[in-house]
Image 1 (cartoon, helix red, strand yellow):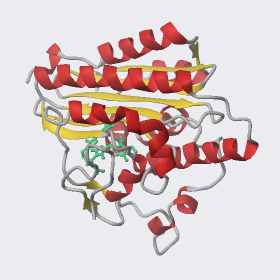
Image 2 (tube, protein in one colour; image 1 turned 180 degrees about the vertical axis):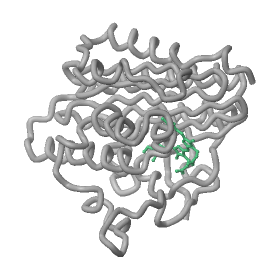
Image 3 (cartoon, protein in one colour; image 1 turned 60 degrees about the vertical axis):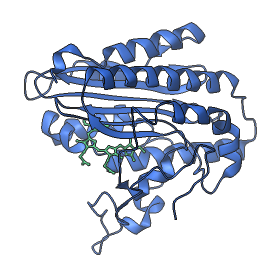
Image 4 (cartoon, rainbow, N blue to C red; image 1 turned 120 degrees about the vertical axis):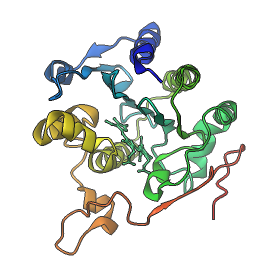
Length: 288
Ligand code: BLA
């Protein structure tokens, strides 16, 4: 398809407008540093914004649009650690032929081992995953390690690009973002220091995973060079990775330690799995 007829700007605009209806967004310094960066190819158009709000530690968005070759959306929002609310995650990589999408309210705690967390946040949202299962079907095998960061309502898809897919994706983004805002509204302030610390570590572990293993990194490197791509990842996209905790990637994910002690470059140590959706419509984990 011709990518010049679609854009992810509309997604970002919608999210910012909706958020401003409910809370006060304050621009973060990281926005200033990264909003003016330029890609090496002289044609990709970048848009980087980041904010905080009374209950939100970081809401940031990066879009990269080159209508000749690809459109990228990387949108995420993290609550302050005093709230154990899920992380809003919308990632899309669209070329004229294919779109790769992850849309989810990523859980702070692995829902397979924390059924109470699953109950708390996802039980009433389960209809959302049914709603889009036909037009945005499960994308097939993925890095097995990623699954513990996904919720039972995750939309993981890789589909042929089309206007219809883009429109459906917008509709899904609207539903998921509104659901996230609702959770943030309802989230109550945690006073127990030890629980706040756990929330902090859960976010840090997530940031550490994504800052090291995000599939978009090689494209960012190509567009911005290694140094700027790294800064973009650590100071903008996954801001907090160098401040919310002091554990390293290998502390959290020791199975990635290679023989010489460095982080194994492979994305997955276990391999890819989950050919079909591993959750049923009740949110039960059904893979072996
Ligand atoms: C592919 N992106 C993927 C895949 C996943 C994700 C699961 C399939 C490959 C795999 O299983 O690793 C996304 N993985 C995630 C997300 C989490 C996770 C969101 O663990 C969160 C916990 N994607 C982007 C951006 C770009 C991008 C910003 O979000 C480009 C700048 C590109 N993603 C991209 C490309 C592929 C991909 C090119 C296919 C190529 C590949 O698999 O390496």
